[in-house]
Image 1 (cartoon, rainbow, N blue to C red):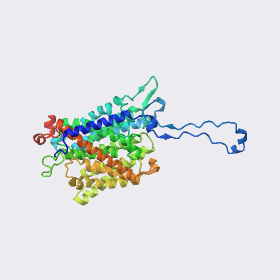
Image 2 (cartoon, rainbow, N blue to C red; image 1 turned 180 degrees about the vertical axis):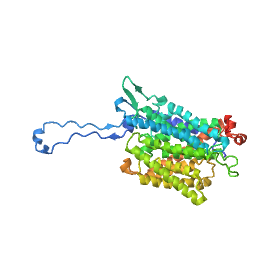
Image 3 (cartoon, one colour; image 1 turned 90 degrees about the vertical axis):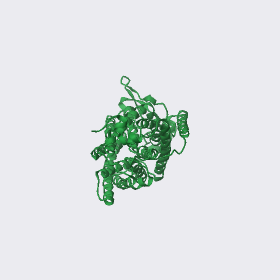
Length: 485
């Protein structure tokens, strides 16, 4: 595909974005009063009903001063060990392991089974490399840019290299993040890291079987810092502009799935179609791998959504239940649509449907009841089936493993239905379809444009695509010197 702008302009665009984010984050005061919501102080005991009778006698006695409202914490704080809740901490540790399991080996197997045999190991290597790379990036800057108070657009630099993290056994103190005040900050960092890993890893399915490994590493570095971290800050950090607007995203429908979906579509357009696409059958190598991977994703999603409550409580339990219902509903509705239109229900279709339901319930999981969850799943199954078939043909992109059709479309469906179906009795907030549409639209626009800019830059530096000979030989052998026998 020809470049729409010179690479020099893309480089200037990226530098200006970095400069703007850094300048705003440094000049914006991170005081709690700037971004923290006020919480009501406990009121004093009410006066007895006979107070009016003794008022003349007590007139000379001044009432004790009423305590002033205090701002909720808006940054990590050091607290005594006693503030940590053992149950919340244990659950968050388990949830972190479950979400990590979604990437390695879950997503690696899910994707590897859908590519051709000559690309199985390269596909797995991409997920594995992203896991390691993003872990180091999260330590260096990602966590700070996403979850520290800063500006409306990006977090500050005070937690780079995890400088906010504190643990001192002798002093009996440790740090906690303001979004999870009953668990150690180290656990919160780890939990959010697993989200930062799987989001760019999802994108690899869109350009499967044709991107250079060096280009992958450079692209993922820039995308994680310039796209994922800002969008996570917008939605999840209380000072982010979408959070202030009231956009609801309990576990990542917008931050993870819409974000990765539109980035995947941009990658598919920029890299072009695989050799032989539309002319020969590019058949999956091992749908058994795909089914095992989908099952690991399904199980791990319990930590993905349930863990986002940041507590071992009733809301976490509700999030797990609605996750199961939505996945089941979507698997059945995708199967029914495929059966009706193509004449046979397939294992790949059922696996894809379950993932579509998991994607769609993600933003809603902490806000909806069981009936709404089943409805969201049923709609997402049919909607994502169309996204992976009819919409894919309309867009004309070789989105190899349907990243946009499942994650982009499913994330948007879930986000919008969250606005329509959110129950104040469960989440404590009223949903707004308009606000949700703003969140989806802003993410699509920013992530799409920024991803194209990053791809232009990477193409100019190292080249995006393997040679036709390397593609014909398979990436396992041509890039990694390995093969599946």
